[in-house]
Length: 345
Image 1 (cartoon, rainbow, N blue to C red):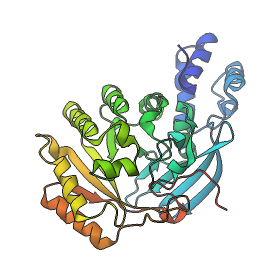
Image 2 (image 1 turned 120 degrees about the vertical axis):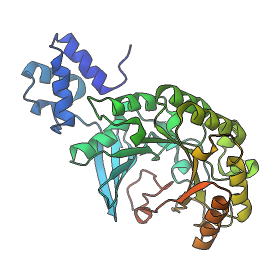
Image 3 (image 1 turned 90 degrees about the horizontal axis):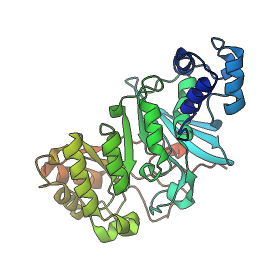
């Protein structure tokens, strides 16, 4: 079987060199406990082993290259160079209680064309490999940051990239990143086969579904994926997900002024989520302030606070759990839907 990550390649190199079993743990500890950035600096390994690692993998442990870092209050956005002279972005959020959370990319660009999303205007350039996904986190780790929680809400549709599952395997490996599944969130626009696979392989990973309109016609205009995976089909799959995992499903809803933020939308969202069964209390709506960029159409604007408050009141009155997402990083285009992978001009 072809290796799916650098860590499997390392295991194979050590096997080919007939090294003792503890060598792999030495390498893993060097990276994840001692934060050693280059194989040649792993002096606990014989020189012949270091040479073999460098020959096949290059000297650097992390395969992505930082190009530019932009900082705002509690937010750092990193532009990273990957193979093929492409760029992706990753975001680090520092919460005041000391929690470090990361928003990472799964694709270079995105091919699903959601109308309000900057990344969607790029089109899909390619899927990221498992290493390119996990190296976004590795970069932050090697620079001394704690990896408390991770969300796949950066560039791309995570469940459309099969390499996501190889990346999740690396991220949850106790010898490597050692992240618990419940500290990882995967966001999707409703890719049914991907939701099913996530439930089978990583049932405790948090799942967020991007809704953005409760009306099929409008959702299809905003998010063409609705024509392929209609809303009612996705909701039935989410019901199954909750029943099998016992975990909450989060409903992401970007508030677009005068488009999807009216009282009729709030009533319809509540109607979608009520009466689904004994598990319906495990749906939780996250209302997200819209973040405009130069790439997205001018007619999309952020909802005013009173419309957001009314939306919340309607949902709460219907017994729906709802939170208004705290807005971070929009001033450096690090907010939801703003990642584009270009250096600022």
